Length: 166
Length: 439
Image (cartoon, rainbow over all chains, first blue to last red):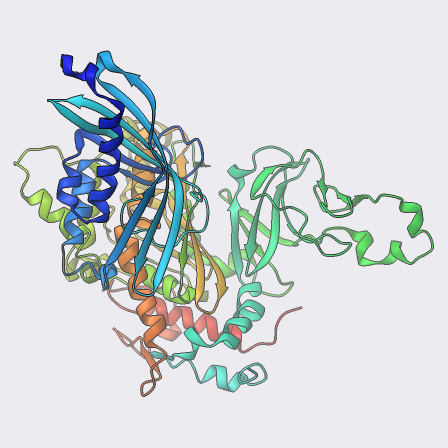
């Protein structure tokens, strides 16, 4: 992995601001900017079970690489995305992220962020809760998401449609 | 609320050969009657025996709203017990699965039951001496569901004493389960996780009908599969096709494709689409797997097994399977306008991981509460549930390719875009619904 000396100097505030900004881009539906936050091998993962070890041989709610994120984002702009009539809106409310792991030599950081997430559509509003784990790398002079894992409190419950990105 | 219970002729009038009255989807009394008359007489999917490999392993589910326990007994037999303490009626087992360590124990007064349901111990049993207890239903323990069948690991139960035998009920449709299990070089499926549990605020029949509705994918799924298709169009030629693209693209196949795919119907409401080929036919080969299949079955038989790529098979009314992708969906009705759909995946014993990877990915992409394909399906189901409350047109059309001859030959293959599978479901529905509730 190519890193630079600058990796060592990423301050907590910079990491925390990154996580706040990531949520804000989703809430403001700036999905193309959000997409650019992911590394080329980046993943967005919502496990189906508690302590799920991986997503390849075990069903998840989402286990999206950049191609799948692209499909989701492009579909949201399609007039034929019928389930988005009327459109969904979402709001993240984040607890201050904690830096759980800091590997400055390799420019790798892990942040843990408890959250409440609301998704509304028409007259309905669903409230979700959980913990988000951001695994970030300093690559090409900036931070990128290697993996965002969203552990939902009710991951194994009977769930309604979840259409945007907690 | 008593519009239908004592009036079988009114129920019969709801189902014409080529259309049905809207009440079948929106009337709460008809839903109650379905839970009393249709579902208990039907063979309902309970679980897979690989979920309970050892003695004492159990899982709990609701069958037509009745909680039951599926348990592996000490003699290796899989039993289904009504999940109701014989004392005060408490649901004895609350966990969704686990091992009961030789007995079930009620959390209220500590009565214990053997794996076959028999009453084992009662605290201070002397207090029941001479009370008539020994002759009562309380002393008999948990009620066992007597009619249970295990077919290639699939466990089904018929709750009522009366009804067709397992073989007569499913008949030739069991060939879809055979094909799913035969796809394992060892002829065996292993439960591999899930379930994805997706709340559907619609009637259960709207979901079931959609499984072999081949006229909706190119419309409802244009925004999901069509977007994937458009993205793939821009990729330089020769780029290896990712699994996700391979799974998504066939959804937006042409009307002609779906029509030529064919649908096969059986008596009692069962059917499968994808007789000649299906959206699963052109997945890339996995050489290691094909070799294992040829070693196990011989080249010709292996080709025959893998050449069957059925789309959805409906085991009316509770189960739908996708043998070619090793994924199943279980229908759990809750109310006239509420249904829980649970999706499970299986590993083909003796097959490489790549097969399970495909099953897991497909299930997630299509059946999850987070699926953009599922979102658009549910959007349409809801729209039906809502739209049927309008006045002025009481009828839901099932005319497509209807012919007066079809009711005499329910076992047959038809063009894939026919609505014959839905008409067959309603023939089974009206036959069960116009009888008294079984004992």
